[in-house]
Length: 120
Length: 109
Image (cartoon, rainbow over all chains, first blue to last red):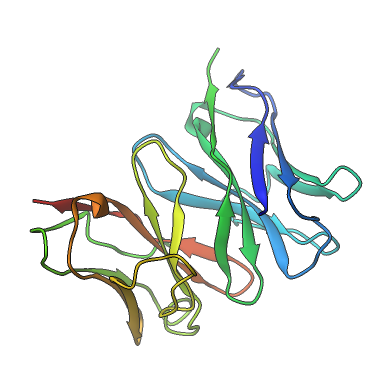
């Protein structure tokens, strides 16, 4: 049973870089057929897709965040990462990592989520 | 890339049915049968309950059903139970990207 777990700082200063990691257990990130994804949820709000990439392909990003986002996959460590540059208080949110099935384009496995607060 | 449109809230009594709509455009919902639905209880991660507009993952109750017509997808929950009270989000493929709906709060009266 594949499981995902987010990790990273819960507090980031404005203008700094938000960095999160999602560790994949119970399966290989190189298995194919999936895109490894990041989604966020502002407090009390809806879900916002950030981006995704496969273990071997190019990343795809939300156009509204594209200039500040980098998603990468580390197959040797079986994890993938998110970097969001130049953060502001508007980036305060719960960040989820999730597995996207490439055939059905549905997020079938989610991490528990991690709250990241941007504050000085 | 605009969010899909969902009603902010719906409600129903135990045992009744409730339907949540998800309105998109010809660039997303209207072009692909790749609509998924997620259930989210407070403080929890979303859970996939419908994929490819009408299919249920293994283990999801058959009280949940999905449909799609044109640019609008719908989620119907029949035989409402107290445990169904949650937020529901739709999501659609939009050509190299995905877009979510704003979410609907289902209240079981």
